[in-house]
Length: 177
Image 1: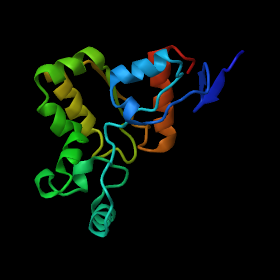
Image 2: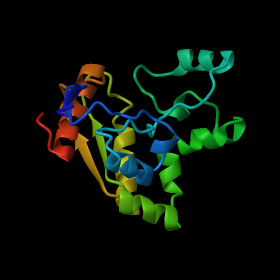
Image 3: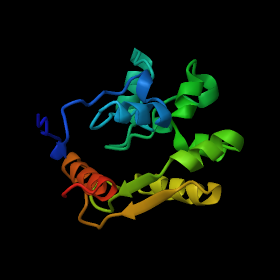
């Protein structure tokens, strides 16, 4: 029986696409889900904002957040001042990766290849510096990655993000672009 389906413009072998869950927190579990038949897996984001939004934080976000710039440290209190400081720290790759060492770093080196993508067009000011800094940090730590900086016509907006995602998924998994 052919269960081929389309999802976000991609052709999948079946409609089984587990969403982000405790099962997708590790590469090993993601591989097990793939072995069990999942045709795609929605992973947790490196930039996941897993903080509760009380009135103060919402106001701070709305009044201080740069348009389209989603780095946690720009709108949350300092790591040490916030009750969920560890969650914020772990979701800020520039802070977290800088301190990554030993077996956790070795595990990342063995099981990871990250693609950092950013355009240089409208609304990218303030956004391109962090992927560049993160790629430099990956270079220093020996973490496999690809730095892909798109042109000055590429805006920090959903249509471009979708195009970038489709391009890189096609490159990684050999799917038609």
